[in-house]
Image (cartoon, rainbow, N blue to C red):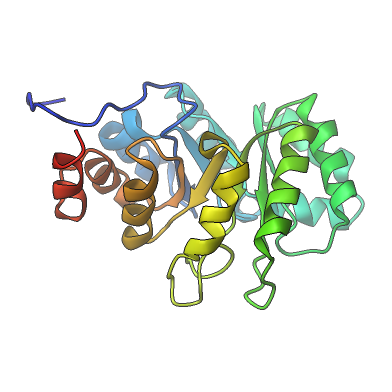
Amino acid sequence: MNFSLKNIPDRSIKPREKGVTMVMDKGLSVREIENLIEVAGPHIDLVKLGWATSYVTPNLGDKIKVYKNAGIPVYFGGTLFEAFAIRGQFDDYRRVLDKYDLRYAEVSDGSIEIPHEEKCNYISLLSSQVTVISEVGSKDAQKIFAPYKWIKMMKAELEAGSWKLIAESREGGNVGIYRDSGEVREGLIDEILTQIPEEKIIWEAPQKGQQVWFIKLIGANVNLGNIAPAEVIPLETIRLGLRGDTFNHFLNTI
């Protein structure tokens, strides 16, 4: 850090198991990625190439290379997995992962209906090839799962081989663990945390208010995802109690 300040919350050190910041790349250029890494690279743990943007990105190989050279794992959004799976092209998807030498993959069912046992089978198969991150929750705002169902699915996916679980919210932060207003479903989160270790969950939190809520609940080392590139540095200051939103919170607890 550039200055010395007392009583700053301890942050985990990369490679992190807790305190992960997952960034959503929705179509950055190579130059934009280089600029992002120059400024925010130390604070980025994972980069997701949003939904199926990788299918239409002309400089895909170059982008992945820049991230990998910076030591930042990159992976395709779960919607791309779903696009392959629903077309009966799962083996083709596995070959694509090998082609781009990706070490992580996301398994989701937010846009399609997959029997949960079948989803867990995909997780199990992929976990022999890559590190699997599985996403729980639907992108359909009309599909609201009871807490017990979230917990049951999360437990099964961890047992199938998932490294981390993503709690769905889309890139807008208005479905899944949130109401359509962006408000956190607090009861749902409380129930999930009674059964699932918090370090196993990446909470999608694209909105600042959502990031603040989870940091105040769990602490500086909560796993947060779907962070916009321009919000990586601001998020790190929120984690450390160096922005007004959490300034007093951490002064009162450390």
